[in-house]
Image (tube, one colour):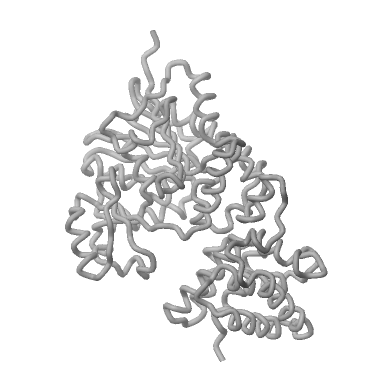
Length: 457
């Protein structure tokens, strides 16, 4: 008998808690089983949802079990996560089905003797929380604001502290933090970037609508279309194989617009893989000029090579080296993009396990790497040339602090706000850099700064 969707979700969760990335663990179990599209969606929801909400689910176990969660067997904890996640977060699953399938899951995975405990805990949850309109109505939450939001919305305390530092501890600031926490627990949008060298936006939109896919335009982004939820396999959508478009979040599209590449220029993308911004640069310069795509991982450049071929671009050259060690580009580039490795705190909705993988220590290590990359990338720029520093995080230690330190140490550089007609202009801050707050714009969280090298006086 083939494994049930919940058993497959459990196997994926077991891999995640053994150290695997959530998306890789999920792909592995889906490849090993034949499942319907409906079951695939359920498995995906259960895995990502249980990972994302694990702190809240642990708090529920602590509240309703006699033993604290840390004393529960690891696999039993995952089974309880699956049951509680269905009961609280999935309206479409009847409570009896959620309870019964979780009890069966316990029996199937070596906890036959604890099946009564699983049944009792879930039914206790239903008695206490079955009619609750919000988790806060049935879960006893800490009174301290940071811990309260962290438990209620399932984040480590330190990330919520970063949001409080960003927005402040006022009533308005706390409301902003809560909105941001809620936003990152939503399913991510999928945005397309039209390749104007192969198709027009209207052409792609018409092809999608003919296939009953209700795409929509995104204001201020000339190449962007947003897909509705549940469109299925991306590679099966109209125009994929023809290179009419590629997947790229709307915030990420702003980065190349801020760089503003021009035909005939030499441009370097210092951390290029998987290549969304590299290919966008080539499109914006009409595939005329030279784009060097650098990345220290040759394996990651392989994916970029495939995308380049699909989009039919000829101006991109690959360089498999660590950008901190590259010296042959000194003083050659008209423009350089450093889309730096970062903590990804602006894309937590896309990476269910990222909130548990990052720590203040990893952020400090990343800030050191970002500084080294920025200092080296700056040596590649011609006098009066442009360098754009970008991250998909909202952590000031990886964003504002890096740029301010760079400007202090390099007096022949200055920050240059985007031009009024640039798509990034509406996100510009008074300091000149650009910041996208996800809960304000329904876009990934991003930071970017356009820097110009000026001739010393």
